[in-house]
Length: 552
Image (cartoon, rainbow, N blue to C red; front, top):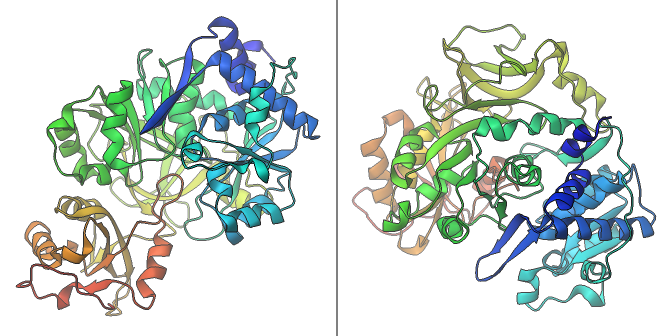
């Protein structure tokens, strides 16, 4: 195995090489809003990754073991990625919001032998009890935000700060020589059931190394994300480009807050940030401000920009959109700025992947017709593995194609357009397919709507294949919100078929770590007693204020 390949694909080797060349170069910055930001150099990262590797090895952990990392975006998360790859330990990222049965499932299914977590996680007594019951060795990071809250986990848990405050340790060795070895065990979002676990090998980073070029990153770019480092988007689009040194450095925050986005960008000179899921809609729904263009951002690297918001977003904020599509299982396509039609996520790189759109019998469908997106390597067959699930793995790559489970259509020039997840179905009303992006934009633009998600439920009238449209909204002030005015606004700006049938008021949209809205939880809440749900047809449009509560 050549040194170049190892330094490309093994994070610890990459960090070590960068630290030898430029130890004082900043690798990444963690923004803490009202608290001082944390800058981490390559020298810091190499030293602390090695210190953590010693601590893990002292606990008897080594090549082939799996260690869960349950942290927000803090430096210790990246130290763990470095330490694990140094020892050949497989990383299992876990959403730090996990608890109860879900947390137990994550730890047990992956057969984790240890856990690295944070003070804010174990401050929750119920979560701390779940972690203790797992019977694993646990290390807790004392974080900047946790310290500001007065959290001190040292009385109950081993604290990583003691490891990092100690002396620089002798080199713990590099134990990965084979790029086909497992690197990461990443859970899918599980929007419709128990998450599967995807097994990644080190050689997957050969594909990821090309993505900064596809995205159009420059060596003076500063990418930012508030997306969790438990998810591939943050790793691929923000962390790895910084470690490879193809951008100036990257910026993370422990979470995404739409009202702080542009402040973070201004504070750190950010030039590009990552959109995913409902982020763009949430940002666009903020009231217009004279500061909307007062920033250095030139590019939004987006995976899911609604077509209806795309050009208004570019115009309002003075940015350009690069749209891309990716699946953790290995799918990829992208649409460079100014190339192809707005609303498309582009095409796969022609030298890497080929795509087709197929029906339920895996037969290609003509341009313009909806079908499932399938992909495979040029001249080869798709390969991927769900951990401990050979049946699902075989189904996913049947016929040599990666079956994405995403319904798309392709135009005559080969540009691909996302429609919906096949397992979730699409919106169909009055006999037509409904583009939820139009509805989302209109609702998001109404004053007082803080966030919105559009989804469908089976038609209450019983029409086969038809859906009723639900607008799940988060409001800035639900007690004073003019709901009737919102519906009048929708009826004025939308076709009859696109007007929501139900308005569901929620305190927050349930989202995964990747900002994907978990529709199934909204459906459960919709049916729960006492839900704040309004049947649009029952609204008196002469009434302009106050919520109507009840059941649809």
